[in-house]
Length: 460
Picture 1 (cartoon, rainbow, N blue to C red):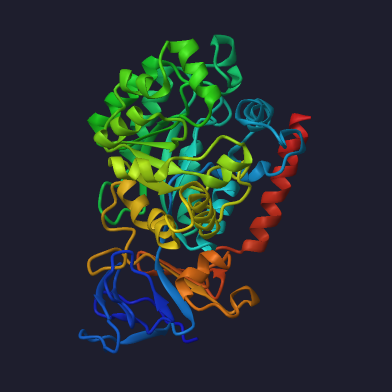
Picture 2: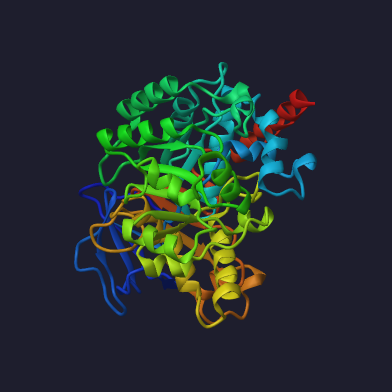
Protein backbone atom coordinates (compact mmCIF):
# COMPACT_ATOMS: atom_id res chain seq x y z
CA UNK A 1 0.00 0.00 0.00
CA UNK A 2 1.30 3.45 -0.88
CA UNK A 3 1.37 5.83 2.07
CA UNK A 4 2.05 9.51 1.83
CA UNK A 5 2.54 12.65 3.77
CA UNK A 6 -0.56 14.58 4.69
CA UNK A 7 -1.99 17.20 2.39
CA UNK A 8 -1.52 20.87 3.22
CA UNK A 9 -3.75 23.73 2.08
CA UNK A 10 -2.17 23.62 -1.40
CA UNK A 11 -1.48 19.90 -1.45
CA UNK A 12 -4.58 17.72 -1.61
CA UNK A 13 -4.56 14.02 -0.78
CA UNK A 14 -6.82 11.51 -2.53
CA UNK A 15 -7.72 8.51 -0.36
CA UNK A 16 -8.23 6.40 -3.43
CA UNK A 17 -10.75 3.69 -4.31
CA UNK A 18 -11.48 1.97 -0.99
CA UNK A 19 -12.68 -1.61 -1.00
CA UNK A 20 -15.93 -0.21 0.44
CA UNK A 21 -16.99 3.06 2.02
CA UNK A 22 -19.68 3.76 4.62
CA UNK A 23 -20.18 7.52 4.86
CA UNK A 24 -22.93 7.53 7.48
CA UNK A 25 -25.11 9.80 5.35
CA UNK A 26 -25.97 7.86 2.15
CA UNK A 27 -23.60 9.99 0.08
CA UNK A 28 -21.45 8.22 -2.50
CA UNK A 29 -17.73 8.05 -1.78
CA UNK A 30 -17.17 4.71 -3.49
CA UNK A 31 -13.95 5.97 -5.06
CA UNK A 32 -12.78 7.76 -1.95
CA UNK A 33 -12.35 11.31 -0.73
CA UNK A 34 -10.02 14.27 -1.14
CA UNK A 35 -8.47 15.81 1.95
CA UNK A 36 -7.11 19.33 2.17
CA UNK A 37 -5.58 20.35 5.47
CA UNK A 38 -7.93 19.04 8.16
CA UNK A 39 -11.04 18.97 5.95
CA UNK A 40 -12.78 16.68 3.46
CA UNK A 41 -13.13 18.77 0.28
CA UNK A 42 -14.53 16.27 -2.23
CA UNK A 43 -16.23 12.88 -2.34
CA UNK A 44 -15.39 10.74 -5.35
CA UNK A 45 -18.34 8.64 -6.48
CA UNK A 46 -18.44 5.26 -8.18
CA UNK A 47 -16.58 5.24 -11.49
CA UNK A 48 -15.40 8.82 -11.05
CA UNK A 49 -12.08 10.60 -10.80
CA UNK A 50 -11.60 13.64 -8.54
CA UNK A 51 -12.77 16.94 -10.01
CA UNK A 52 -10.31 18.89 -7.85
CA UNK A 53 -6.60 18.64 -8.49
CA UNK A 54 -4.49 16.61 -6.09
CA UNK A 55 -0.79 15.93 -5.71
CA UNK A 56 -0.76 12.88 -3.45
CA UNK A 57 -2.79 9.72 -3.19
CA UNK A 58 -3.22 6.89 -0.74
CA UNK A 59 -4.13 3.45 -2.07
CA UNK A 60 -7.16 2.30 -0.06
CA UNK A 61 -8.15 -0.58 -2.31
CA UNK A 62 -7.73 -3.21 0.42
CA UNK A 63 -9.54 -1.39 3.22
CA UNK A 64 -13.04 -0.33 4.27
CA UNK A 65 -13.38 3.41 4.83
CA UNK A 66 -15.50 4.71 7.73
CA UNK A 67 -15.90 8.02 9.53
CA UNK A 68 -13.72 8.11 12.62
CA UNK A 69 -15.54 6.44 15.52
CA UNK A 70 -16.59 8.54 18.54
CA UNK A 71 -16.32 7.25 22.11
CA UNK A 72 -18.78 9.13 24.33
CA UNK A 73 -17.90 7.76 27.76
CA UNK A 74 -14.74 6.34 29.27
CA UNK A 75 -12.55 6.35 32.39
CA UNK A 76 -8.97 6.23 31.13
CA UNK A 77 -7.44 5.67 34.59
CA UNK A 78 -9.28 2.37 34.86
CA UNK A 79 -6.90 0.79 32.33
CA UNK A 80 -4.71 0.35 35.44
CA UNK A 81 -7.23 -1.90 37.22
CA UNK A 82 -8.46 -4.42 34.68
CA UNK A 83 -9.57 -7.86 35.88
CA UNK A 84 -8.73 -7.08 39.53
CA UNK A 85 -9.47 -10.36 41.33
CA UNK A 86 -11.28 -8.76 44.28
CA UNK A 87 -13.62 -6.86 41.93
CA UNK A 88 -14.65 -9.76 39.70
CA UNK A 89 -18.26 -10.93 39.49
CA UNK A 90 -19.74 -7.97 41.35
CA UNK A 91 -22.53 -5.54 40.54
CA UNK A 92 -21.98 -1.78 40.40
CA UNK A 93 -22.07 -0.63 44.04
CA UNK A 94 -19.91 -3.44 45.55
CA UNK A 95 -17.64 -3.24 42.49
CA UNK A 96 -17.07 0.48 43.13
CA UNK A 97 -16.54 -0.05 46.86
CA UNK A 98 -13.83 -2.62 46.06
CA UNK A 99 -11.98 -0.37 43.62
CA UNK A 100 -12.26 3.08 45.23
CA UNK A 101 -9.47 2.35 47.77
CA UNK A 102 -7.15 1.37 44.88
CA UNK A 103 -8.02 4.42 42.80
CA UNK A 104 -7.42 6.67 45.82
CA UNK A 105 -3.67 6.01 45.31
CA UNK A 106 -3.53 7.31 41.73
CA UNK A 107 -0.64 9.70 41.11
CA UNK A 108 0.49 11.95 38.25
CA UNK A 109 2.46 9.23 36.46
CA UNK A 110 -0.53 6.88 36.65
CA UNK A 111 -2.80 9.49 35.06
CA UNK A 112 -0.34 10.33 32.29
CA UNK A 113 0.37 6.74 31.30
CA UNK A 114 -3.23 5.55 31.58
CA UNK A 115 -4.40 8.44 29.38
CA UNK A 116 -1.79 7.61 26.75
CA UNK A 117 -2.54 3.89 26.81
CA UNK A 118 -6.32 4.27 26.64
CA UNK A 119 -6.06 6.69 23.72
CA UNK A 120 -3.61 4.40 21.92
CA UNK A 121 -6.05 1.49 22.31
CA UNK A 122 -8.89 3.63 21.05
CA UNK A 123 -6.99 4.97 18.04
CA UNK A 124 -6.01 1.44 17.07
CA UNK A 125 -9.71 0.50 17.14
CA UNK A 126 -10.65 3.30 14.72
CA UNK A 127 -11.69 5.85 17.34
CA UNK A 128 -10.75 9.44 16.52
CA UNK A 129 -12.67 11.35 19.23
CA UNK A 130 -12.75 10.18 22.83
CA UNK A 131 -14.46 11.43 25.97
CA UNK A 132 -12.87 10.81 29.34
CA UNK A 133 -14.71 11.17 32.62
CA UNK A 134 -12.09 11.60 35.34
CA UNK A 135 -13.48 12.19 38.82
CA UNK A 136 -10.75 10.92 41.19
CA UNK A 137 -9.05 13.94 42.76
CA UNK A 138 -7.13 14.04 46.03
CA UNK A 139 -4.61 16.24 47.84
CA UNK A 140 -1.81 14.52 45.91
CA UNK A 141 -3.66 14.58 42.58
CA UNK A 142 -5.34 17.94 42.19
CA UNK A 143 -4.26 18.57 38.59
CA UNK A 144 -5.26 15.32 36.88
CA UNK A 145 -7.03 17.06 33.99
CA UNK A 146 -3.96 19.20 33.19
CA UNK A 147 -1.93 15.98 33.01
CA UNK A 148 -4.50 14.43 30.69
CA UNK A 149 -4.36 17.40 28.32
CA UNK A 150 -0.59 17.00 28.06
CA UNK A 151 -0.81 13.23 27.60
CA UNK A 152 -3.53 13.47 24.95
CA UNK A 153 -1.39 15.80 22.84
CA UNK A 154 1.25 13.08 22.54
CA UNK A 155 -1.23 10.67 20.94
CA UNK A 156 -2.87 12.78 18.22
CA UNK A 157 -6.39 11.84 19.33
CA UNK A 158 -9.24 14.34 19.52
CA UNK A 159 -10.54 14.53 23.12
CA UNK A 160 -13.33 15.86 25.28
CA UNK A 161 -11.98 15.79 28.83
CA UNK A 162 -14.68 16.12 31.45
CA UNK A 163 -13.78 17.61 34.80
CA UNK A 164 -15.43 15.10 37.08
CA UNK A 165 -16.01 15.58 40.77
CA UNK A 166 -17.11 13.90 43.98
CA UNK A 167 -18.21 15.90 47.01
CA UNK A 168 -20.39 13.43 48.92
CA UNK A 169 -18.08 11.07 50.82
CA UNK A 170 -18.94 7.97 52.78
CA UNK A 171 -19.18 9.88 56.06
CA UNK A 172 -21.93 12.06 54.52
CA UNK A 173 -23.93 9.16 53.11
CA UNK A 174 -22.22 8.89 49.73
CA UNK A 175 -20.37 5.98 48.17
CA UNK A 176 -16.74 7.15 47.68
CA UNK A 177 -14.15 7.31 50.49
CA UNK A 178 -13.67 10.75 52.03
CA UNK A 179 -10.05 10.86 50.80
CA UNK A 180 -11.17 11.44 47.18
CA UNK A 181 -13.89 14.06 47.68
CA UNK A 182 -13.43 17.81 47.40
CA UNK A 183 -15.43 20.83 48.52
CA UNK A 184 -17.89 22.47 46.17
CA UNK A 185 -15.74 25.63 46.08
CA UNK A 186 -12.62 23.67 45.10
CA UNK A 187 -14.47 21.84 42.35
CA UNK A 188 -16.10 24.92 40.87
CA UNK A 189 -12.91 26.99 40.93
CA UNK A 190 -10.97 24.23 39.18
CA UNK A 191 -13.75 23.71 36.65
CA UNK A 192 -13.72 27.38 35.69
CA UNK A 193 -9.92 27.43 35.46
CA UNK A 194 -9.79 24.40 33.17
CA UNK A 195 -12.43 25.80 30.82
CA UNK A 196 -10.51 29.05 30.52
CA UNK A 197 -7.18 27.30 29.99
CA UNK A 198 -8.02 24.36 27.75
CA UNK A 199 -11.52 24.51 26.22
CA UNK A 200 -11.60 25.18 22.48
CA UNK A 201 -15.18 25.89 21.29
CA UNK A 202 -14.36 25.74 17.57
CA UNK A 203 -15.75 23.11 15.18
CA UNK A 204 -12.28 21.63 14.59
CA UNK A 205 -11.21 21.60 18.27
CA UNK A 206 -8.80 18.87 19.31
CA UNK A 207 -9.46 19.44 23.02
CA UNK A 208 -12.66 20.46 24.76
CA UNK A 209 -13.66 20.54 28.41
CA UNK A 210 -17.04 19.52 29.85
CA UNK A 211 -18.21 19.46 33.48
CA UNK A 212 -19.11 16.10 34.99
CA UNK A 213 -20.08 15.55 38.62
CA UNK A 214 -19.71 11.80 38.97
CA UNK A 215 -23.20 10.61 39.94
CA UNK A 216 -26.16 11.30 42.25
CA UNK A 217 -24.58 9.10 44.92
CA UNK A 218 -21.25 10.94 45.00
CA UNK A 219 -22.07 14.68 44.82
CA UNK A 220 -24.41 17.06 46.62
CA UNK A 221 -27.48 18.61 44.97
CA UNK A 222 -25.97 22.04 45.52
CA UNK A 223 -22.88 21.11 43.50
CA UNK A 224 -25.10 19.82 40.70
CA UNK A 225 -26.97 23.14 40.63
CA UNK A 226 -23.85 25.29 40.71
CA UNK A 227 -22.15 23.18 38.04
CA UNK A 228 -25.18 23.62 35.76
CA UNK A 229 -25.01 27.40 36.25
CA UNK A 230 -21.27 27.47 35.50
CA UNK A 231 -21.69 25.34 32.38
CA UNK A 232 -24.41 27.68 31.10
CA UNK A 233 -22.22 30.73 31.74
CA UNK A 234 -19.19 29.18 30.03
CA UNK A 235 -21.20 27.44 27.27
CA UNK A 236 -19.82 23.96 27.87
CA UNK A 237 -21.58 20.61 28.11
CA UNK A 238 -22.65 18.68 31.21
CA UNK A 239 -22.11 14.98 31.80
CA UNK A 240 -22.85 12.46 34.56
CA UNK A 241 -23.81 8.84 35.19
CA UNK A 242 -27.55 8.32 35.53
CA UNK A 243 -30.06 5.47 35.71
CA UNK A 244 -27.33 2.83 35.45
CA UNK A 245 -28.81 0.42 38.00
CA UNK A 246 -31.92 -0.16 40.07
CA UNK A 247 -29.71 0.38 43.14
CA UNK A 248 -29.19 3.95 41.95
CA UNK A 249 -32.95 4.44 41.62
CA UNK A 250 -33.42 3.27 45.20
CA UNK A 251 -30.55 5.46 46.43
CA UNK A 252 -32.11 8.56 44.86
CA UNK A 253 -35.50 7.75 46.34
CA UNK A 254 -33.99 7.31 49.82
CA UNK A 255 -31.59 10.27 49.63
CA UNK A 256 -33.68 12.83 47.72
CA UNK A 257 -37.22 11.43 47.61
CA UNK A 258 -36.98 11.47 43.80
CA UNK A 259 -36.29 9.09 40.94
CA UNK A 260 -33.00 9.88 39.14
CA UNK A 261 -34.56 11.82 36.26
CA UNK A 262 -36.75 13.88 38.60
CA UNK A 263 -33.62 14.61 40.62
CA UNK A 264 -31.79 15.64 37.45
CA UNK A 265 -34.57 18.06 36.56
CA UNK A 266 -34.67 19.46 40.11
CA UNK A 267 -31.01 20.51 39.85
CA UNK A 268 -31.37 22.16 36.43
CA UNK A 269 -29.85 19.49 34.20
CA UNK A 270 -32.75 18.37 32.00
CA UNK A 271 -31.80 20.14 28.75
CA UNK A 272 -29.91 19.65 25.49
CA UNK A 273 -26.48 20.60 26.92
CA UNK A 274 -26.52 17.43 29.04
CA UNK A 275 -25.50 13.90 28.17
CA UNK A 276 -25.76 10.89 30.44
CA UNK A 277 -23.79 7.66 30.71
CA UNK A 278 -25.80 4.42 30.62
CA UNK A 279 -29.43 5.63 30.78
CA UNK A 280 -30.88 2.18 31.36
CA UNK A 281 -33.62 2.39 33.98
CA UNK A 282 -36.04 4.96 32.61
CA UNK A 283 -39.79 4.41 32.31
CA UNK A 284 -41.84 5.45 29.26
CA UNK A 285 -42.70 8.89 30.62
CA UNK A 286 -39.06 9.57 31.49
CA UNK A 287 -37.93 8.54 28.00
CA UNK A 288 -40.40 11.04 26.52
CA UNK A 289 -39.07 13.80 28.78
CA UNK A 290 -35.49 13.00 27.81
CA UNK A 291 -36.42 13.17 24.14
CA UNK A 292 -38.33 16.42 24.54
CA UNK A 293 -35.29 17.94 26.24
CA UNK A 294 -32.92 16.46 23.60
CA UNK A 295 -30.64 15.01 26.26
CA UNK A 296 -27.82 12.76 25.07
CA UNK A 297 -27.30 9.16 26.20
CA UNK A 298 -24.04 7.22 25.94
CA UNK A 299 -24.90 3.54 25.49
CA UNK A 300 -22.23 1.32 27.12
CA UNK A 301 -23.19 -2.26 26.23
CA UNK A 302 -20.11 -4.21 27.38
CA UNK A 303 -19.89 -2.54 30.78
CA UNK A 304 -23.61 -2.91 31.30
CA UNK A 305 -23.34 -6.63 30.57
CA UNK A 306 -20.27 -7.20 32.77
CA UNK A 307 -21.91 -5.49 35.76
CA UNK A 308 -25.37 -6.90 34.87
CA UNK A 309 -26.79 -3.38 35.01
CA UNK A 310 -29.40 -3.86 32.27
CA UNK A 311 -29.94 -2.87 28.63
CA UNK A 312 -30.29 0.73 27.48
CA UNK A 313 -33.56 1.32 25.52
CA UNK A 314 -31.70 2.88 22.60
CA UNK A 315 -34.46 2.74 20.00
CA UNK A 316 -37.10 4.18 22.32
CA UNK A 317 -34.73 7.01 23.30
CA UNK A 318 -33.86 7.77 19.67
CA UNK A 319 -37.51 7.73 18.63
CA UNK A 320 -38.33 10.14 21.45
CA UNK A 321 -35.68 12.62 20.24
CA UNK A 322 -32.70 11.87 22.49
CA UNK A 323 -29.21 11.74 20.96
CA UNK A 324 -27.72 8.26 21.48
CA UNK A 325 -24.00 7.63 21.12
CA UNK A 326 -21.70 4.77 22.08
CA UNK A 327 -19.15 4.47 24.88
CA UNK A 328 -16.70 1.77 25.90
CA UNK A 329 -16.96 2.93 29.55
CA UNK A 330 -14.23 2.14 32.04
CA UNK A 331 -11.50 -0.33 31.26
CA UNK A 332 -12.19 -1.91 34.65
CA UNK A 333 -15.78 -2.75 33.73
CA UNK A 334 -15.37 -3.48 30.01
CA UNK A 335 -12.32 -4.44 30.39
CA UNK A 336 -11.02 -2.95 27.16
CA UNK A 337 -10.89 0.29 25.18
CA UNK A 338 -11.91 -0.93 21.74
CA UNK A 339 -14.66 0.99 19.98
CA UNK A 340 -15.12 -1.17 16.89
CA UNK A 341 -15.67 -4.14 19.21
CA UNK A 342 -18.10 -2.02 21.23
CA UNK A 343 -20.05 -1.32 18.05
CA UNK A 344 -20.32 -5.09 17.53
CA UNK A 345 -21.60 -5.50 21.09
CA UNK A 346 -24.16 -2.76 20.48
CA UNK A 347 -25.32 -4.53 17.32
CA UNK A 348 -25.65 -7.92 19.03
CA UNK A 349 -27.41 -6.49 22.07
CA UNK A 350 -29.70 -4.46 19.82
CA UNK A 351 -30.68 -7.59 17.91
CA UNK A 352 -31.30 -9.44 21.16
CA UNK A 353 -33.52 -6.66 22.50
CA UNK A 354 -35.37 -5.59 19.35
CA UNK A 355 -35.21 -8.61 17.03
CA UNK A 356 -32.76 -9.71 14.36
CA UNK A 357 -34.49 -7.72 11.61
CA UNK A 358 -34.88 -4.55 13.67
CA UNK A 359 -31.29 -3.65 14.55
CA UNK A 360 -28.52 -3.79 11.94
CA UNK A 361 -24.81 -3.11 11.64
CA UNK A 362 -25.81 0.24 10.12
CA UNK A 363 -27.66 1.15 13.33
CA UNK A 364 -24.61 0.31 15.45
CA UNK A 365 -22.22 2.22 13.18
CA UNK A 366 -24.55 5.22 13.16
CA UNK A 367 -24.51 5.21 16.95
CA UNK A 368 -20.69 5.01 16.95
CA UNK A 369 -20.29 7.96 14.56
CA UNK A 370 -23.06 10.48 13.83
CA UNK A 371 -24.88 9.65 17.07
CA UNK A 372 -21.82 10.52 19.09
CA UNK A 373 -21.22 13.69 17.08
CA UNK A 374 -24.79 14.87 17.79
CA UNK A 375 -24.48 14.02 21.46
CA UNK A 376 -21.25 16.06 21.75
CA UNK A 377 -22.60 18.95 19.64
CA UNK A 378 -19.83 18.42 17.07
CA UNK A 379 -21.53 18.79 13.66
CA UNK A 380 -18.24 18.55 11.73
CA UNK A 381 -17.55 15.04 13.06
CA UNK A 382 -19.17 11.64 12.60
CA UNK A 383 -19.70 11.40 8.83
CA UNK A 384 -17.85 11.55 5.53
CA UNK A 385 -19.02 14.61 3.58
CA UNK A 386 -17.62 17.77 2.06
CA UNK A 387 -16.78 20.25 4.80
CA UNK A 388 -16.47 17.63 7.52
CA UNK A 389 -13.30 17.17 9.54
CA UNK A 390 -10.94 14.61 8.01
CA UNK A 391 -11.38 12.04 10.78
CA UNK A 392 -11.29 8.63 9.11
CA UNK A 393 -10.85 4.98 10.04
CA UNK A 394 -9.68 2.41 7.49
CA UNK A 395 -10.13 -1.27 8.33
CA UNK A 396 -8.50 -4.21 6.57
CA UNK A 397 -10.22 -7.52 5.84
CA UNK A 398 -7.15 -9.68 5.36
CA UNK A 399 -7.53 -11.85 8.48
CA UNK A 400 -8.92 -15.38 8.50
CA UNK A 401 -12.02 -14.16 10.35
CA UNK A 402 -13.13 -12.25 7.23
CA UNK A 403 -12.53 -14.97 4.66
CA UNK A 404 -15.72 -15.63 2.72
CA UNK A 405 -17.43 -12.38 3.72
CA UNK A 406 -19.78 -10.93 1.11
CA UNK A 407 -20.56 -7.44 2.47
CA UNK A 408 -17.33 -5.72 3.59
CA UNK A 409 -19.04 -3.15 5.83
CA UNK A 410 -21.26 -5.71 7.54
CA UNK A 411 -18.24 -7.99 7.94
CA UNK A 412 -16.51 -5.45 10.18
CA UNK A 413 -19.07 -6.07 12.91
CA UNK A 414 -20.41 -9.52 12.09
CA UNK A 415 -16.96 -11.07 11.73
CA UNK A 416 -15.53 -9.16 14.68
CA UNK A 417 -13.02 -6.58 13.47
CA UNK A 418 -10.84 -5.45 16.34
CA UNK A 419 -8.21 -3.17 14.84
CA UNK A 420 -7.93 -0.43 12.24
CA UNK A 421 -5.21 -0.51 9.61
CA UNK A 422 -5.00 3.29 9.27
CA UNK A 423 -6.56 6.16 11.23
CA UNK A 424 -6.59 9.86 10.36
CA UNK A 425 -7.45 12.66 12.80
CA UNK A 426 -7.88 16.21 11.48
CA UNK A 427 -6.05 15.30 8.29
CA UNK A 428 -3.07 13.73 10.08
CA UNK A 429 -2.29 10.02 10.06
CA UNK A 430 -2.21 8.79 13.66
CA UNK A 431 -2.23 5.07 12.83
CA UNK A 432 -0.48 3.63 9.78
CA UNK A 433 -0.21 -0.08 8.96
CA UNK A 434 -1.64 -0.93 12.37
CA UNK A 435 0.95 1.07 14.32
CA UNK A 436 0.55 4.27 16.35
CA UNK A 437 2.48 7.04 14.63
CA UNK A 438 3.34 9.07 17.72
CA UNK A 439 3.83 6.47 20.46
CA UNK A 440 6.17 3.58 21.18
CA UNK A 441 3.36 1.28 22.21
CA UNK A 442 5.52 -1.51 23.62
CA UNK A 443 7.51 0.86 25.85
CA UNK A 444 4.25 2.47 26.95
CA UNK A 445 2.71 -0.92 27.75
CA UNK A 446 5.69 -1.92 29.92
CA UNK A 447 5.66 1.36 31.87
CA UNK A 448 1.89 1.30 32.26
CA UNK A 449 1.81 -2.30 33.51
CA UNK A 450 4.50 -1.54 36.10
CA UNK A 451 2.47 1.38 37.45
CA UNK A 452 -0.64 -0.83 37.55
CA UNK A 453 1.19 -3.42 39.64
CA UNK A 454 2.47 -0.75 42.02
CA UNK A 455 -1.03 0.65 42.40
CA UNK A 456 -2.41 -2.73 43.45
CA UNK A 457 0.47 -3.27 45.87
CA UNK A 458 -0.21 0.06 47.61
CA UNK A 459 -3.80 -0.97 48.29
CA UNK A 460 -2.88 -4.31 49.89
